[in-house]
Amino acid sequence: MPDELLIAVASMAIVVGYAAICGLLAHNPGMPLWIRWPAPLWNAIAHDWRAPAPTLARPDYAKIDRLERELGLVDVEPEQPIRAAKTVCLTKNCAGETLELRTWSGMLAQRIHECETP
Image 1 (tube, rainbow, N blue to C red):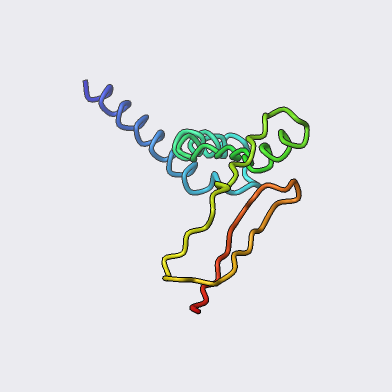
Image 2 (tube, rainbow, N blue to C red; image 1 turned 135 degrees about the horizontal axis):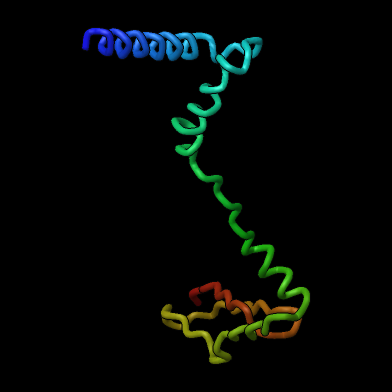
């Protein structure tokens, strides 16, 4: 029985010694393969699997919208005109003028009123 125990302790000492040598010298590129082989394996197990996944680039929605409009793939919503009704001023007896701004197509875009009291 003591011989078996002695063999077990000796083999454990050899394994621990080999592990210590590999742990201390494995990161040296000039070492032989029988000493360096645990380092890449350990890095793959302990570090590489925890690396964050690369984020995918988000689509450029403004560019997509612009290209769709240029190619005519999307229906352009018509402009909503401003009501053609008369401008109402809250100043009593106002004699001011109203300037109407229109788009190139002639659609009323904005009305600017300048008040003048008589």
